Structure formats: structure tokens, C-alpha cells
Length: 257
Length: 313
Image (cartoon, each protein chain N blue to C red):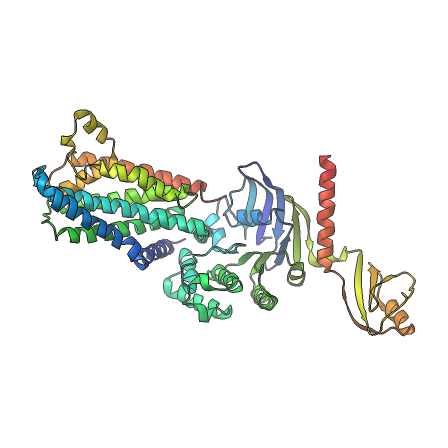
């Protein structure tokens, strides 16, 4: 295939993916927005006003970057896992597998779809947060870089989950038992400085901690982790997961008979 | 000579140990209308799955118009269109979007994809349904949608795995006409079917696969010539009480107005008609008792299975 044909194939998947989540916006865009508004009201306003400051900022300001990141993570992951699994389940994945499109284009198309939904929800949540607090941008470059890298990383994760899933139950196991606990324990609601040394050390094994802190640095200018190190860790995860996705596609594991 | 499809020593063993293909070799000439027949579980769909790269082969080689799937997969895929046995499109997409998206996967720009889709949907009688969700189509329409989707990139080889399964006779005939037309325009077609009448009337060459082995690979005409005895049913105008005796021919009464006549290879039917006319027996109509290919197919498969049982004993 020529470069233009590859681009056309890639854009076909991207267009299909964006149309899919826009068509069912009541299921894809609305619920995370409502959930986050509830977080802002309950944790930010009601409870947060009694907590006082954290990391030198009022509690609402402190948790907003984490909650935006949480939206990006869950929606990037959720979009790819549900879309790719339904494609596999309905058999329409075969449409792509019989075509001359290279495997990396299939992966790139789905990851871009996941990013589009993650970023769309992230933008909506950011806009809603402005009703509750003022957001000052400390470093726009870091914000954009971290949010893009995070959505790529979790889109790749969603893809792997979808490849191995054999039922619709399987696509909710990882988000429920892995992703949600890691997100809650990833410094969204607290600074790891509050934890005893042992648990602060354990928290550093949690990749989401790096993303939340790097993103918070971009907005507030504070982070529990050195930002350069955080970006390195996220990059390493992206490379690892991308390589594994390509291995799965090239060998046909969970996809071809 | 470059074949449309060349399969050499193809083996496939599934992860549960089931050996679906035991080293089959097969060639399909360019422009051919080829039937791949076999009983359920014989290996037809596995063979087509390997060719269309949906099934990983264990060993052997497959090439499409000279492009080896191991080394030139992308070029080979560009030349193939696949219509699988099961409906495998997104049931929530609009009919036209299913076809347009498939064109996109082949790198066809959207305006051209839209043009080709309109053309195919009109040819296949789906134009009025273009904006409806594909899940609302009838079974026959879904089959036609899969054919439109497989043809949108103008493949030189069209692979159809039981394209007329569950389709009513009127629709089946219109699909035969459509397939015959595109074959005459130069598209090579490989077809699997359980309707042997379909294979006999459409296909010029045939392979029969059973238990992972090719047990017959020849021209349709050549295969039909090997049929030793054909039985014809004569519908009589008047009831008959006694079977006439015609030397060299076997006759028997299926009912008082139906006479069955068995004709061996090399015999002609004129003596039968002469004798019946002399005996003042009027024949209103005549037909084959069974489909000729069906008879051969049953004979070949049952004799292969008997041989295999003999070997295993």
C-alpha cells in the first residue's frame, strides 16, 4: 500500500471510532461528566472545604488535575476495549484482517479513537471544573504532553484487554479490579507525602501516580515525582505495551484461528 | 502459468490437536469458476480461512496470482475479495457505511468509495436500503451486502463460502446470474456450497475435500463423465400396470404413472423411447432422479470414508 492508501485506511478507522462514541454520547460522554461533577461537589466543595490545603493549594484545586486525568484514563481505556472487543465479537474485525492494511495501522486507528474520546471527556471535565475552581496553567507543554501520552498508554492497555477478552464480562474485569484501585491510589485525592515511607515507596510502583503528578505539575507547578522521571516512566510503558500489541497482532493471538 | 490460486502441501492443525488439513494441494486457473465441495467439517472453510489469512496455517504454501502469502501478503490481499459463511459486518452500521468502510481499509479515497458503493448497492438491489442499519436486512440481503463489500476494491479473485445458504430460490437464481456475469467479466470465483445443483450449473472445475484431504480435483465435465449409471424418471400420461421389458435397460415402476429407467454410461435413450412408443406408452415429462453431481459426491465421500475406516482398522 502507498503512504496515501495507508493514511486513508487509518482515517477510515479513526472516523468510524469517533462516529461510534459520538453516536452513543449518552453512554460515552455524559456519564463521566456527571460523575466528575459529583466528585467536584462532594470531595471538592463539601468535604474539601473541611480538609483545607494540600500541597500548598486548596483541596479542590489539588484534586481537579487528578480527576481530569482519571477521566482521560478510564475513557481512553474504555473506548478501545469496548469497541475492539465488539468488533471481534461481531466478526467485523475480519473486515480489517482480510484487507492489506498493515497491523500497526489497525492499532494506530483504535488508539487514536481511544485518545479522541479520552481527550473529549478530559476537555468536558476541565470545562466543568471551571464552575468550581480557578485553574491556572503552569506549563501548557507538559499538560499537553502528559495528557496525550496517558491516553495513548491506556488506549494500548484497552487494546490488550480486548484481544484477550472472551466475553463482555472480561472487558470490565481490568477496569474494575485493576484500573480503578490504581487510579484511586495514584495520588488523585492525596499527596503521597501524607503516606508512611513504606506505602509511599509502594505507591511509586503505581504507573498512574506518575501521570497524575506530571499533569498536576503542568497545572499547579507541584508534583510528588520529578516530572522528567515521570515522563520517562510513561514512555517506557508506552513502548512496552505498543510492542506487546504488535506482537499480538502479528502472531494473531486472540484474533486469528 | 500463473494460477489465480495455488495451494501446495497445506497443513493445518488447531491448538486442540485437530488436524483440519492434511497437506492439500490445489490449483485454480485465472478466470475459472471453481467449486470446493465437501461434507461439513471436511476442511473447506479452514482452507478458505488460510487463503484469506484469517486462519494461521501450520505449514505449506499459498499463492494468489503468483504472490506468496508468506512474502507478499499485502499484494495478495489486494487481489482477493472474501464472502464468509457467517454474517460478519457491524450490525449497527448503515448498509452503505459497511461497504464504504471496507473500501477505506483498502486505501480507496472516500469519494471513490462512495461512488463504487452506490454502483454495487444498485447492482445487488440494496440501494433502497442504503441508509438502514444492516441488522434490519433480511438474510438474503445480508448475503448480498457481504458480496458488495467483497467487491468494492475490484478483486480479481472472489472467494465465496456458502453464499446462498438460507437464501430463497428466486434470490439464489439472481445471485447466480450476478456471479456468472462478474465471472464473464474476468473475476475468478471460488465457491463452496452444499447446493450441488448450484456447483454443477455454475462451476467449470471442482475439488472435493473430505477429512482434510482432496479426494477429487478435476473439471466438472470430466467428473460428471465418470458417473456410470444415471436414473431418469418418466412421468406417464396413463397409469401402467406392467413394466415393459427393453433389452439392455433396467426399468421399474415407482408408481403407476412413474417409470424409472437406468441408463449406463455409453448407452443412449433412443431405444427406450422407441420401445415405449411401440408399446403405446406416452411419456408426459422426464427428469433426472437425483442431481448427477450429488450422486457422484455421495459416492466419492462414502468410498473415501470406507477406505479411511479400512486403514484405521
